[in-house]
Image 1 (cartoon, protein in one colour):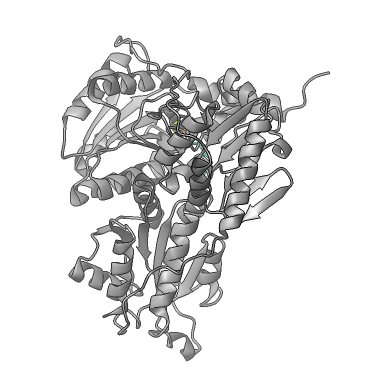
Image 2: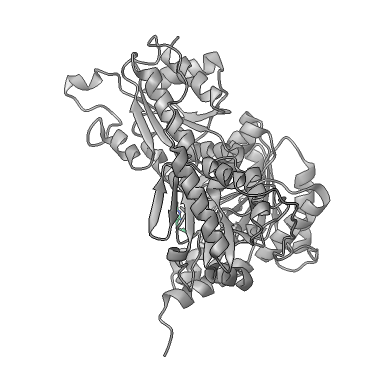
Length: 542
Ligand SMILES: Cc1ncc(Cc2csc(CCOP(=O)(O)OP(=O)(O)O)c2C)c(N)n1
Ligand SMILES: [Mg+2]
């Protein structure tokens, strides 16, 4: 079969639900095969950052492969930012970039779209993917595809495939199974036994769950593990929402100085913190006044288990969880989510809108109609989303790049059909919000709440004296109809409630609610985060 078809079948067999992309002359042959064969649905968008975010959203919502297809240079290099975010946030996105034909460089002339050299792009993507291949040999291409897609699944990180345009129709054999990555059963057993011994010896063990539990589809097994371990459970910022329906649900989300002081004390004073699937970074661990004592902690992520000063390599998270379960008796233990009750009971008066009013409005609707899956951008919308009831929250909480929310929410609905609630600030909406114009073509109808404070408010909280944080009022709601959706601008709590109810009742067109928020008004969590950051990063008097 043709190389392009072999690749598309391999992607579909490994769980990909669609390809998101923008073509160019180096990618036209591949896009032609996609359109003609329909092996996977092809969804084109308007700007490559959104292609990357949409593929990431598709990967996260289904814990499966997301696929982004772009042209060489101008397209692929436009997508570096979202793929870097997917890399650090463990999202399995497959980048397929068109490229000049195998012999086009022989002319000695520069090729349009190229960077420093024809290899520059490959090297750039080596920095933000876990495996790469240039598919320039029909004899090796199927095995290379299996190797790279296997790595994408095993590491739950993006990978890069470069497809020269003269190779698209090359005759190849079908792509076989992913190569099996060797795992030493004895090492898995030793790691599991040492983890259990450490937890048993600890006076105050805590289980902390994070992103990799979701990415590797381990949530139900980890819920069972939490029940059998019988220790307090918390999530990280990136793990929020995990185990919420478990028999022993998390007590809450660890947000350092920005979070519930009880949860912070539990984590930071633990002498046996077991971080399962945790991404160790400042935003995910928030701004902690006390450093978490890694000497007394256990960290299982990135196919490695680290206990104090020593590590077990090549220990996949699923194998570790299975080994732990095999060594623990079944339990009927149950627990309650002591975490703060989600704020509800919006007062539908003529008062101005506070971010927490948006959380209350969303939660009131969730109490009536069930929670929606949420895609959040960076900004106070994400801190507010910490207080929203959701059926899965996706957000760039580690990389913290803007522009994720709208395209990721569109990508998620495109591959699951689940209607998304998208929360986004006005600054981030200015970046990728216009992708909503593709909803009509793609048959998507997300509900989008724009937190419009006409400001880069998160930056203003750290540098209030800078006027460049002021944004103009773009009146986004007025543009919705021209783009195929419905838009409404609301300035009071009552209007917000009514707009959300109407949006929820309207299907088939995207619904844009532009919630006007006074500048300087922050969500409770962002206010704590800012105060905590200032306390932690500025020398205390005395
Ligand atoms: C791609 C990118 N470029 C710049 C920045 C830096 C930044 C972090 S937060 C922020 C302001 C966000 O404004 P928005 O109106 O969306 O939300 P809010 O603060 O609630 O008002 C900026 C510019 C990041 N993170 N990503
Ligand atoms: Mg703003």
